[in-house]
Amino acid sequence: MLRPFAQFGLLVLFCAGTALVATKAEAQPDESRPNILWLTCEDMGPNLGCYGDSYAVTPNLDRLAAKGLRYLNAWSNAPVCAPARTAIIVGAYPTSLGAEHMRSEVRMPASMAMYPQLLRAAGYYCTNNVKEDYNLTKPGQVWDESSSKAHWKNRPAGKPFFAIFNFTVTHESQIRRRPHTLVHDPALAPIPPYHPDTPEVRHDWAQYYDNITTMDTLVGQKLRELEEAGLADDTIVFFYSDHGSGMPRHKRWLYESGLKVPLIVYIPEKYRHLAPPEYRPGGVSKRLVSFVDLAPTLLSLIGEKPPEWMHGKPFMGKFCSPEQEYIFGFRGRMDERFDLLRAVRNSRYLYIRNYMPHLPYGQHLAYMFETPTTRIWKSLYEAGKLTPVQRAFWEPKPPEELYDLEDDPHQITNLADQPAYGPVLEKMRSALRDHILTVRDAGFLPEPEMHRRAGETSIFEFAQDPKRYPLERIYAMAELAARYDPEAVAPLVNGLRDPDSGVRYWATMGLLIRGKDAVAAGASQLDALLADESPSVRIVAAWALAEFGTEQARQKALDCLLQLAPADKNGAYTAAFAVWVIDTLGAKATSIHPQLRDIPRHDPAAPSRANSYVGRLLAHIFGEKVEFD
Image (cartoon, rainbow, N blue to C red):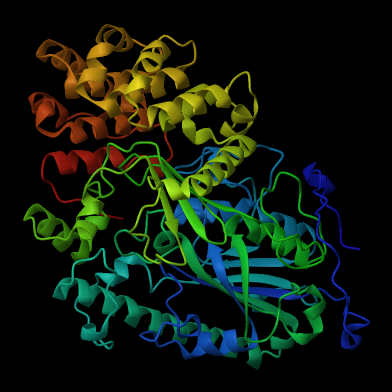
């Protein structure tokens, strides 16, 4: 029996899975503990030969898949690295932790641990080579070693290992690295229908595939190293990417192109009793799995029940759970740009809920605009030279999106308004609502407000308390706000006086989303909200009045935003929110631009991860070049 996790003060989750029946060859399963090796890469969808991509050249991963199991429906829960890795490291949804944004840093509750701490408590030597990038402050020592020198070979004699090697060559930044001599023929590159077919786009896609081949070589080297060390028969191997490709409309977006990842698992013969029922060498699994399931699966593989605070479900091992009907995705702030989206998929359909539908998909994100595809795509949009499918990325979003993944692999035909799909739409809405309320999604407070209201407690603990965070009421107002129903104006105006800041925020956002007439209906109350106790409510009220109010109201609103823009006085999160709104207002805010240029851009009390975004927004306002770390 492995050591329990009592020292963490954790309860355990009794999984509902049934025990696997051993075959005759496995009548006496090996009781030793497997080594576990994770080979991971960045910013890559399932663009591998073994997944049927004929343009890909990936012999090493194809060989691994030929003796292992390929998952066809594996999701990152977030379409960008930091929140995706946060879901992995704790096995809980970052939305419940206040850790959904790219990037941030929040406290974990004392009742939780990061999964390497649980593995180490069970006797494993745990190494990470090398990227971490969690949105959580580490609760003490997490890894035995996390560095470019971390390696299983450094473990003490007799200890099983868990090791990660992360290959960065497929990252978004490497798509645009120049000079680069293409190996893949750009004329043959598969161009999705939403991208324009130009030389720049073809070059980026070909370079993306070149990088995948380079990464595949690195995977092959690591697998040979395992074999040469005599450990291949004792080691379970996982391969996956942290989210979809780094191309625009892939990374950062809740389509399959942003969330779907390759996942290959090889289980050596002596540990086949730990395999899921569908495991066959060279086989495939249609099971829905996501990153939040990885940590509990690791614990299940070493014979431990996952703790009850883990939202994920083990998909192999001693405590393998039944298959899930749904998996879930989320998006919050992406670097310097704010937005709020949630997604759910089942075996056939993908549903996306846009809570800020008045914003375009393709807000100007400095890092994304470094990629040539992004720049040429936007320039062609401005020149009016795109098809309707290609234009959509640069225009406001519908409140709801529903896609048939079998018939529409690129998700370009939105079925949400088609009456024939009404029952499907309602089922997916209900599944998403149940999930949001079950995990106590903290993201229905704007980022500055969740920090303000949590105070000295963790955001997770704050969000679990219905008295401090009445999620049902806040969520109901968000659902009402993020539609274009004209009859909702009266209840939205009433919501401006609600005692809860989250309800007031969404009531204000709902009027803003509807435009000039709705803002006029609540103008006097919005004016009063410029002095609200919540800076976030003040910011959105100012946004509404600056966008659609009278000239006098606009100037008063801009003065409010200007007061909230300095990071040293208002905090990094509030300042970024205020400056983002100023930038989003465009020409309507130019009167205060001169006063913005020299405002303090850093909050000395904030984590370093939160302190670059005011500067990026100001750089965009003033046409300055952004220098990335």
